Length: 301
Picture (cartoon, helix red, strand yellow):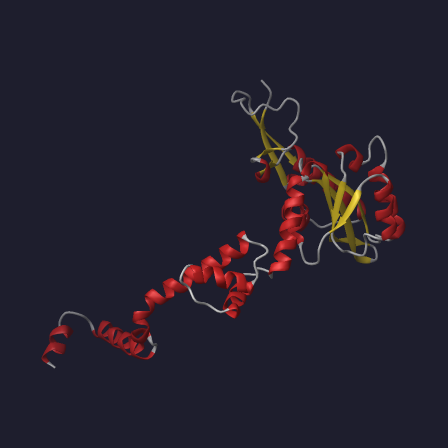
């Protein structure tokens, strides 16, 4: 009791009560019992990291193969534990990992002759109310050159066939100009057989991606995110033409005025008079779509 009185003369009652509550909490929260588990937790973390590493570096390894590799290093785990950890981190089974890896290697090795295509949507205000528009675009993987093929509320077979003719036309068709030999696309039913046949007849092989594998068309997916975040999500579209104008302006900004991190953080296709070493001219700002898109540059000396 004397000790408590001595402490009370030094600190205030609220502090003493706080210490008391913390002491009670430690008694019942299991902290005392967990004190000696630090080493086990460290080992568990090491095993989990190894399981993830083995799965990523060896796409053909199944659960049992990973269990065997771990046993060589002195770790004993079950195949169920391996499966649970891989599922926790969203890593697919061995056949799916091997398939995705082969696709990724093929795409990486053939970017110069590969194009991807995809749809995204936005709402347009019309006299009949909000109407969903489908925007179809194509991207050359190596150069990141993007071609917006069209926007329509009804991407039916007739419309898709016309798009296919446009992009394969000799002289100015996008796929022809890019030297494209392979076109990758997802399993959207809008990529109908007649659309694919026109493209194939033009000498371009169409490659339908596996189910649930947007990562294999990652460049197209990133372009959609950039377009929506930097442009589409910041605007209201009154009629189809306002949407077309916005897409044209964003396309010009993307190609000529926007530094692309995936290509060394430089401009993709700068203007002829662009000079990154110029530090003399006045700094100017070019605005598009009412200032939503801005590009800063130096005036030519």
